[in-house]
Length: 95
Image (cartoon, rainbow, N blue to C red):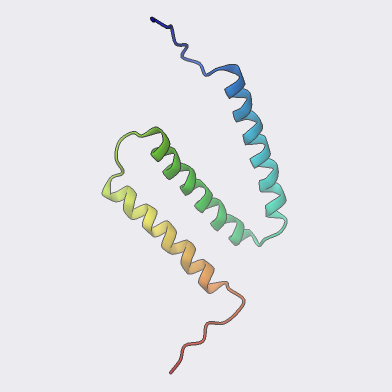
């Protein structure tokens, strides 16, 4: 069973990637109309982070370095801080 594998992906897979990217692009423009620019930027950063981490989990590759992990942690903490600071209901702290 000596199969010759092409360096290019199958045409159907390439087309599915194009369609998925187009849908994501259109949804991005729809989302940007609904939120403030800073909210969009924060959501976009988390979306990109999710793509990187899930891609690493699916396809493997070199393990994340300590610097990579620190960057992921800082991104998540920044998004959490933004979410907490921009929430509409104030957080009440009991005395």
